[in-house]
Length: 261
Image (cartoon, rainbow, N blue to C red; front, side, top):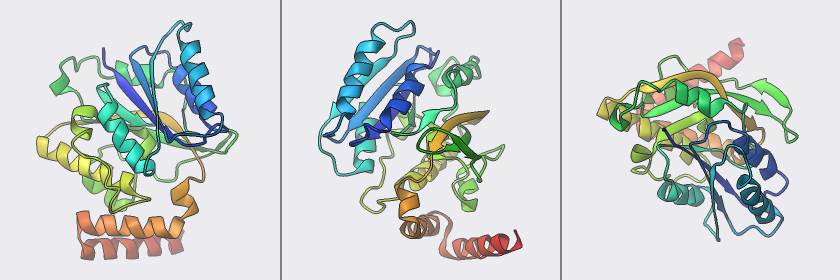
């Protein structure tokens, strides 16, 4: 059975984490490790997690729930801890406030890989669509950027076409590429996805478009709150991976396209 690690990093997220917990808890697929990396929360977050662990022991479909709570150096430090602690075949980061679109997301994805029994023949990346929700979990819109039919590292020249929360990476590959928290404090996930897909191309491994809505993503994360800084980081990441000239002209096209629309 293919196993998924769902990694949730959080800090003082008692007002949001219940939604995320419930969406993992209600997945009808049994091969799930829910790995929660908490930054030593001082609110009700840990109490909710502990209650979740107790409730799971009585559930008809039980998942493995692991929680580590200790001070960290920010979200990407916590994500790097998750990469080292995860035990699944694939890892997906689903942060506090985000949730799976429905209870069959993981079983639907697993059923698409029934022919890939051998670990080395499994797709290196699984990806899908994302909806955007408000703080109460209400649908707002489909994400403006949509996944291409055929994804590669070059696809992100047009922006982050696949949301980080709808990007499953095979753990044996993902663990080789920790988030670059030294250089990027807001957009290391953008860089991480590109680096993983570069490695996938080097290894000549497949990527699987699941064609399903994977995640309902919470509107207004840190990168939105610090939008200008995030855009500058992404520009620098694109310069690093695609070259300065190519990135400059691509952004000229972004401007022209926004005016035309």
